[in-house]
Length: 498
Image 1 (cartoon, rainbow, N blue to C red):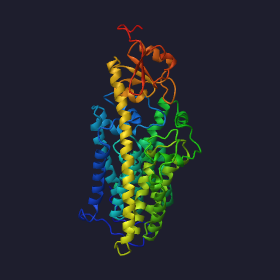
Image 2 (spheres, rainbow, N blue to C red):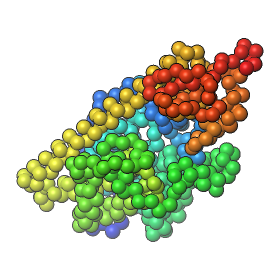
Image 3 (cartoon, rainbow, N blue to C red):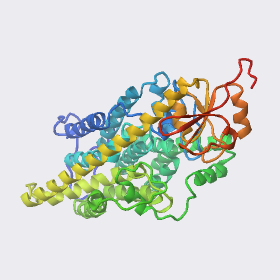
């Protein structure tokens, strides 16, 4: 991606072998990065599988440009990046399998591209190992083929940070400038608030180097996504302040919230830990979470001796600002929130691990290598177990949504139709219906509006088994389904009369 591969990092005293045009594939270490990306893609398709149904948030993003169902309510915190990313498939196909394969291939290609940005800044084996460490986490494998934004924020952050370092060393590197803009735009279109947090260290780097051109390109890239989000705030949410306020409300009120323990509880495979109660996972499940910061700090010390402090420090700074809001400013947890931090930390961690297992002359330290290999083997085993259980559990939940949709069709609730109540958004997508709720985080209709709709299209309210439905649906015909009760409104007359 970058052309300035012959540039020496600012302040470097010891030369790093540069990548030059015409160098062989193997000498550049390209095959290592390609192998990691290919293995990551294959692992997604084998361990997660293309048949995994869409989750709640995925149905919201996919439905915005979907051939299967009308657009679901788009709440204030969301951004349009994922919907645009999947539109080339979802706009004409309803195949979940095709979408999963598309995202798995795209995520592998994106990981390879982001790692390539750092060639010449770190040894190829360190980059490959860092990519493998990140790609082997259960949360990475689970969300790589998912229509969710966090993995793509991570890719944008890694690419943007690497290109910033390259432009700082070689202001004439036009490819790296384009990489800065593209990486910043990717982050901002996926999650504007994450892009702002991750962009802070990058802006500091620009200010210290007094590189106006780099700063303008970085801000322009961020502005493409943030600007669209702000414009939409005024068009659909009553203004920027209102959208930010509503986004905070939907997320439980942003402020000082210690969510470190919540994130630890989510490591066992809880896709959404809200409320995040219960006991902590087994120490074996959490061990890597405590080892990573120590290895990252060791990676910085190693980088200082190797005269590559700037790139390592920038990675650690961006990882820190990426994680801060999700550790200390939000009252719940989801493991995917920290994907950008994990990817940014992966390279310094890999650097530290190679330092532990090799001598200054490049030879292996047998004892240290055996200990690290044993630790990594145990880590991979834990990640596989958590991933396997997570896939089984979520697949069962999503199959239930499909069964509910089939029951609704059997009972005459077919498109065009409206669903409301418990889990209305994902079930409506599976059934091809619209969804609406008069209360909660996704308010987009009134009770009077629902009753009016019943006169025109088939309508059903969903509730927990045995629980009464909303007031407007009391008296509607009840039918049990897979984990839900279906309350069917009286069918509309042919002339639209009740």
